[in-house]
Image 1: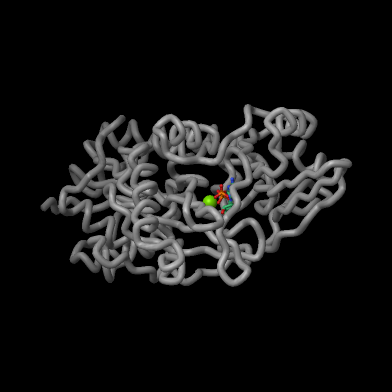
Image 2: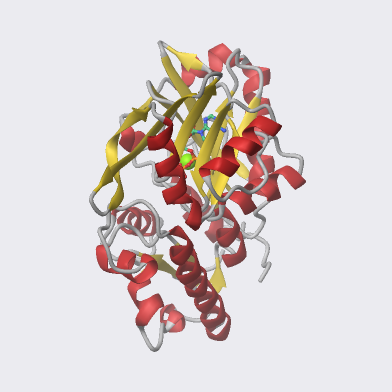
Length: 367
Ligand SMILES: Nc1ncnc2c1ncn2[C@@H]1O[C@H](COP(=O)(O)OP(=O)(O)O)[C@@H](O)[C@H]1O
Ligand SMILES: [Mg+2]
């Protein structure tokens, strides 16, 4: 057992930071030292070592702070879609700074910065999973415009695809696109056009003219796109679903079913938590174990990360899976306790990580 205190790099005062601090206190430790992303991006010194030699550093999401968002993406309306390429450049420069300063301070990162950088680029994440033999939906070659998208879709005989902003999250810049002969198209997305570009709304809507869809795709394309085959997801009670599975120290510990009437299951878009017991019954126990094994294999592609959150798509008919993405910051599931028999039974995602780290179950050092 180590007594080294934790340091969190995140958004001071947000829910993620508060929940992790609560998990530290529940383990009898003082709350972590919190360093804000604002400081990572602007301060002359970070002082990562202030919590003591050997402090364990958890890198968390920059959160939704408007000032930090403006530093990452540049000034503008916080709800706007886009800016991902600049966001990624600034964010990964921040990650490099954290790694260098942690190294100097003798601190131990709980999540490898290169792993985080790969997970925050849907193209690189998909490629890494695919190379490891983890099932993923087939991807199209890179596209940089709507016209090119349609050409590549036709070549691959893909009529239904998910178009994703390479650096998006929370369904920002995600389009579920179907095409049919005669020029018919239907795009479902949370983006709505305004006088100053597209913004994210809290509900999804459809666009059914080619001019609208082309305008949207062309607006997103400069920041990078990842396009993959639309995986037909299983449904319960008329709602499609996927699973968010949190993997801590290599073990799938927490799972939540996300269900929706729209093709996107993200909870803030009207998605709702579904009945995990019903999903397990529908899958059968063998298939459920296979599903968790896929999640563990996806997590193993990020060996420097104490925790990842896997989005697992379950095929209609319940007998096949694909990983939709792996999230570096995928553990914000307040109140969710661990799977029976997982070692995290009765505890939340944050407590599971604190316990794993304290028992020396640390990720491989890769940087
Ligand atoms: N290839 C796919 N086929 C079907 N549904 C998908 C596919 N990829 C993603 N989804 C769905 O779209 C939603 C958002 O996609 P995701 O890649 O997880 O992006 P985000 O980072 O915005 O969460 C998820 O609810 C997921 O179920
Ligand atoms: Mg997701």
